[in-house]
Image (cartoon, rainbow, N blue to C red; front, side):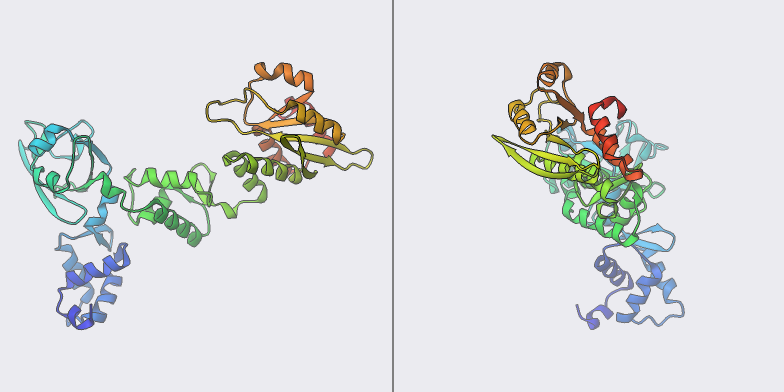
Length: 393
C-alpha cells in the first residue's frame, strides 16, 4: 500500500499494520517513529496520541509497560483445554469444569463476557453461574465446523474486563514446528549463551509467560528431537555446536537410533580415549579393532556395539558370537567387548562365559568419556577398567 493511501488511515489502523508487519510486540515509541514516516501527526505529543489510540482500540493489548501487541496473538497464551460434547455443540454451551472455574467471575448469576478468536472477531457470551456453564457459542462452533470431541483452548486476556481468547486446536497448529525450530535456533544464536526453557519460550513466542501455554509442548518436543539443540544443565538449553567434543560424543551416543552410526560413534569414543581404531569385517558382521600402543606391550580389543530393539529395554540375545570369536583370534585381540545400553545378564551369562566376552554398558562408557575429558586415563588403566566393570561404579 502506497504512502498516500496510508495517510488516510487512522492512527490505530496504521499501528495495527506496523505490528502485523513486525509480527511481534513493540514499544509505543518504536511504533510512533514508524507511523509518523507515513502519516505526520500535527500534535505536540505524537507518542501520547499513538499510545492513546491503541489503548482505546480492542485490537491491541499491552503485553508489558509501554509494549503493545495484537490481541489476536494472545492465542499463544491460551492454556485451558476443553473437549466438546454433543450437548455443547447442540446448545452452544461450555460447562465450567473445576479447572476452568477460577478464571471466570461468579459474583452474579448471569455475567456478560467477551471471547476473541484468532481472527480478532469478538463473540459475546454469558456465564450462567446457576447452570455452571457458558452460553452463546453456537454460531462460533458452527462457523469453525467443530465436531464432537474436538478440542478448543481458552486463554485469559483481562479478568476485570472479562475478556478471553478462544481458539480451536487446529488453529494452534498453524505455525509449523520447522518455523518454531528456526526461531529457537535464531534466539539462542543471537543470545550467544544457554537459556532457560522459559526464556526460550518467551523469545520464540514473543510474549511474557507466567505459566505453560499451547506452544510449550511443541517447543519442548523440538528441543529434545532437533539435533541442533542440547540441554546443558537443569532445563537450560544451548546449541549443540557450543559443546566440547566429549560432550557432543556423549549426547550422540545416547540419542542415535541407527546401528551403523552407533558403531561409528563407539569407534570415535575409543579414538578419544587414546586407541588407534579401524573397522574390520568378519563373515556377516563388522567390528571395531582398537589398538593400545604401549611402550612395553601393545594390547588389542575387538568391540561390537548393539542398539536395543523396539520391543526390549535390555539386550536379550546376540547373533554374532562366532564371528566375534573369529575376529578376536584373527587380530590377536586380548579380549572382546559388546557395548549396549543394558543387558539381560541372566540370559547371556552362559554365552559370555563360553566366549569370554565383556558386556559393557553405555552409561559406563559415558562415565569414561566424562572422566577422561577431565583427567585422561592411561591405556593401562583403561585395560583394567574394561576387564573389571565394577571399577566404573
